[in-house]
Image (cartoon, rainbow, N blue to C red; front, side, top):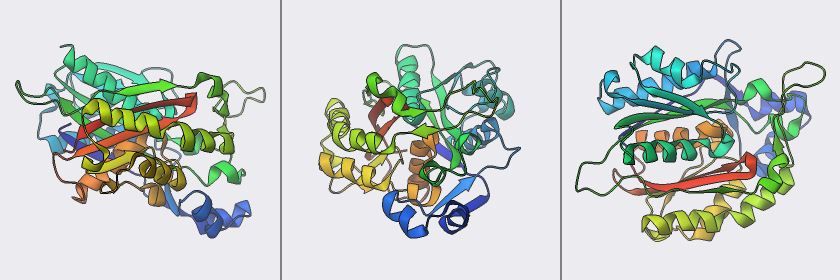
Length: 315
């Protein structure tokens, strides 16, 4: 992983603003979820707009020419158009010529899934340098009268430039641990083709998802460390999907990573779905809170009920 970039919309929405219409309070939202503010995209600001901004920043930080990128992978669950895919639009906007382009949908575990897919492509010789993007515009799919979901989410994008490690040097992206509990897939949904013709809306069984995340996922995160040959105590950072502050703290506490910097971007950005991991990591790197080269656990989880994680060297 060579460089990172992120993008967030300009509109800041506070808990106080939402409380006025949802019959809740800043205290309730902060204590139950951990969110204090979130960024909401404008009506005419698309998933492709945000993805392109984050990708352009990551590319600029890398120092590489756009023509050197041969693969663009976008993780998203909120693209409105079926085609062309978001990856093709990103490539065109930032001047990448003739790359492989595809989107994938693994919801909140999307970025780690996309990063692993690009890593596999590079290891197999199908790519030499890629841009991997996580982006979602959840505001398009929320019921803004439902306090159980409207207070959780924000919009944004994060991107990483990834290339083959020089010969004879250790890989900077560890083996992925991914999987799912498909029996619980319907606990988080964003169904299409509603009978009334209205926009699909996000729904989740919050308590069931919370129990799954706090009981089933820490062993998976620990396995990602083990496969990378990194003890939790050696981690320089932990960047989980930014779903809920209690979930984040539970996973970190259970794997015993006592000295790692723990990403809590949820507080200021909300849950940005596939964008949450690269967005949070990009900010930590920008703030120089994690040393270059330090091992960082990335761990996504969410709808599906899917999960994916790996240890990476911090850019």
